[in-house]
Picture 1 (cartoon, rainbow, N blue to C red):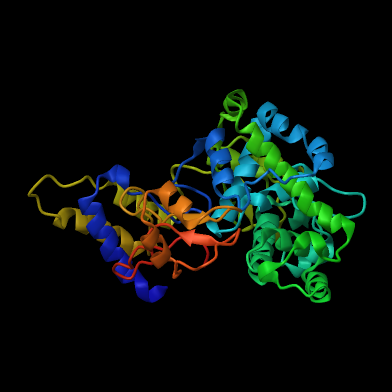
Picture 2: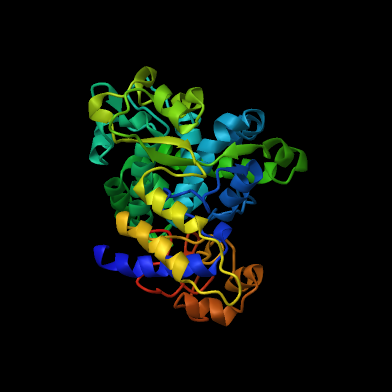
Amino acid sequence: MRARRPAMRRLAIVLACLLPAAAVVAADAPVGATEARTERQGREIYESFVDGLADRDCSADSSERWRRHFAHVPADLARTPDRLLPLFGYVVDQLRAQHLPTEYALIPFVESGYRPGARSASGPAGLWQFIALTARNHKVPIRPGYDGRLSPVDSTQAAVRYLKTLHGMFAGDWRLAVMGYNAGEYRLFGALRQAGQRAADARPEELPMPQTTRAYVRKLQALSCLLLEAGEREEWLQAIDHRVPVLVPAPLPRGANHLDSWAAREGHDPEQIRRFNPAFPDGRVASADRALQVLAPARAGRTGSDAAAMTAIAAVPAPAAGSGSAPAAAAVAATTARAPVEPVHYAQAVEPPRSHVVARGESIWRIARRYGIGVAQLLARNGLSGNSVLRPGMTLLIDDVLPQTAGVDTAQGSP
């Protein structure tokens, strides 16, 4: 990373001189912040969720019991959008960034009703209802005065890492990954062996797994279908179409001792910050917990030396036609000399390549038509042939991966 910084500075200087100031946006924001936006409409969150689904076919859904059980979820989203939509949007963002099916974003509805402070009498806690042993195995900090399972940041990062591992283990089949998440991957491997099946062409409903594990898949299928059907009603879409904050992880400074004072300094609503971060009892921040991350609304302006560098870049006006760029370059060079600039995303200059998660029943022709590209192009970009079989959960690149320029890695998404 250090070797790339001089090249990054040169690229920042060039772009600052060539682009209008509004086109240059700091991109050291945490995963999920889109073009440094601070708010978005609820319909955008819903559309992102639907676009990321691996399976949109509800014709064979027979989970009437779980449809009745979760029938309240669409109504809850419409009735309390300020509570549910920001967290739901944050989890969807994390999954989309890792090219994972957004069926996984429904797990917190099943586990906790999307309440980050939820605790079960039997021990599990948080959005994802981790038990203490599982949390520690996935590097979620738990110590006196701080339970990282109650942190949407700590617990979601751990859950997404684990789901990504399971997704790869089980051939991109989200149903198998969910079974592994519920019952353990080794138990699922044993069930596949016992049934003489392979992950690549498994029939999850036939595997010798506990009834609760098979029901877990049906719960998510029922939830997915309920939300898809709700989206067909314009009145429901209008009900969720509130402007809500984009939530991102924000570092606590080492001097912070209470969430309320930190929120006030940052211009956030202290009550909202506490609601999103119940891992800090009564908002208190112990000395051992400083420098942790909290979930907070994204801010247009950033603080710190890196932000100062980016502010200077954004403030450089576009040169008039025929004018030289030396003054602008000098201004940026003076700033970057003090604060090394990490990889920068340019909201209008560089667009991240699009991707598509294959849903059940989709064909390569249908996907190509949806994005307005040729079938041959789509096949070539993904190393596929005309005989290749598309499987639900596969991620296809829609656009060519952007070339690396001046040492800047422009690829976004999973590492």
